[in-house]
Image 1: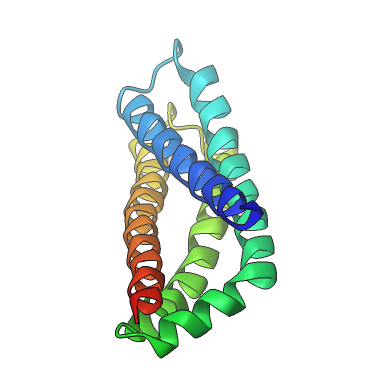
Image 2 (image 1 turned 135 degrees about the vertical axis):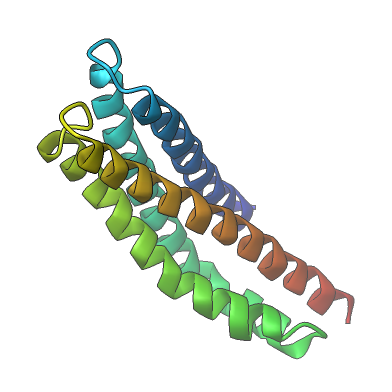
Length: 152
């Protein structure tokens, strides 16, 4: 039961990070003096949620994933681990770095001052959103790989 609770926290914080990146993207599209404080807060929130997702997911991976990996690899969908988990492990670091860079880009390259600064923040948000959607899909495939492996 603890295994599933920890996994759901990992997913929850990841999804919250993605949703905050979507909200930030929309705010930056309409950047102005009225919403700049919210832009700064959202950039920090995206970073915080992605870091928490990384820490919780890393703990789960080290503590519980070995048994699930064995189930997946023995089942009909070994590629769920061999491709999706391997790719997910590496792509998440890029997403984490983008999330950590996001507040720096917002605070140092104020989206209000130039189109170039605005585009930088929009691009970072877009990459986080796209990578996040891939991560969620990959997680679903990995989870289904466990289910199929358990069915024999």
